[in-house]
Length: 351
Image (cartoon, rainbow, N blue to C red):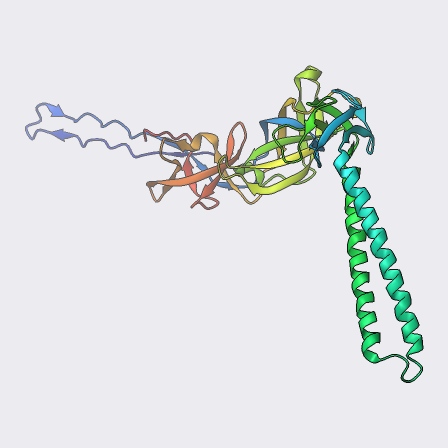
């Protein structure tokens, strides 16, 4: 980076003499004004690496609550058990549901018979009505209306019976995906209530595939794209470097913490990593190629503002800026600046 020296003229006094040639007197020179290094505002991204805290989470996780009221009959799993999708986890006992299903089935069967009789009656009358004067049109329309009403009632009872059958299926609790049981809060004989949502019966998490969740500061998030490289470390592997790529971005800035949630997919077939583990992330950012940057020492941060000192036409002006990526000696700045402006390279709040 090129630096320029601003030199202030040294003002010296003009010598004065007495007219009679006696003692000659000269005034002492005035001290030189301070000299400042200037640096140009340049254009181009500042590549940097950012260290952030993150956390591993299960790729899928679910809290299993009862869908129907009943008593716990059996529990087939415990904490740490690996289960596959569709595996029976527990069964519930609810005799009232069984009775309701039987009643619904009987009502459906009865309405089905009634509909069949009305349908046959209508077809016979329709055939007889072909003989002029044998059947009155009113009788025929009455029988037809009753047949259609019985058909509607039959369909309704069938739907109710199917509903009761579905409710019976909820007595068998199965795994919705492959995973590990991480929490069990129920035992045989316990009464469960479908309305209670304070504590799940079981907790299931997918652990062979994890999510690394990291919150990236707003100033950096705009420069991070999908497939950017991420390195992270967990204490369980004692400093072993793991790498991944940004797979998902929330595209939403948290208004409280001013950061954006992004995720990295982490394969975990060997099961060394666990959901909830803390991770230290090193994120590599290439920077914004359209950004302007200045020496890092040119930016002054006070309690009220962040600014640079711009020298133009022998006048120094404070220009407020916001900052982006930073390296050891350069920092991206955003504000009322243009490429080629001269700033004081080493500035402070006392100037």
